[in-house]
Image 1: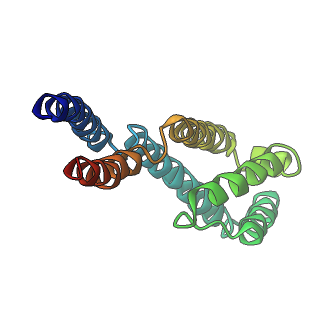
Image 2 (image 1 turned 180 degrees about the horizontal axis):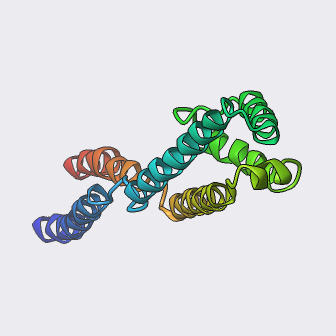
Length: 171
């Protein structure tokens, strides 16, 4: 009887050790994406460009040159219409800026040219695209992670093994 229990017990110990090792591995999985800091940096750069663009447009509103004042007035209204707040949710800001920049490149291209703001628009577009690409990559990265790996390990370790222990105690 002792040999029978010993053989069953040694198999359980091997299984228990494997479960503990798996739980340790699952605990080591970092929840933070390595892209998060890059996204924050790119977002700060984009927000700075957007703020600079708004200040530049606002600066032209007080010029006495008629065509520049008129262009600045139209672009100021465009800024107000979109009401983009750099503190808003990242994806929402990115989407609004895509449309905002598209308007600047098409609908308001002559006003942008009149005020010589093309460099702002180009840089803002590049920064917005960088944020969009980084957030999309982070989303794809998160989808590839094993969801619930730690919970599965804990379930196996905390629920399955006590049940086996109970059965072994009945032998």
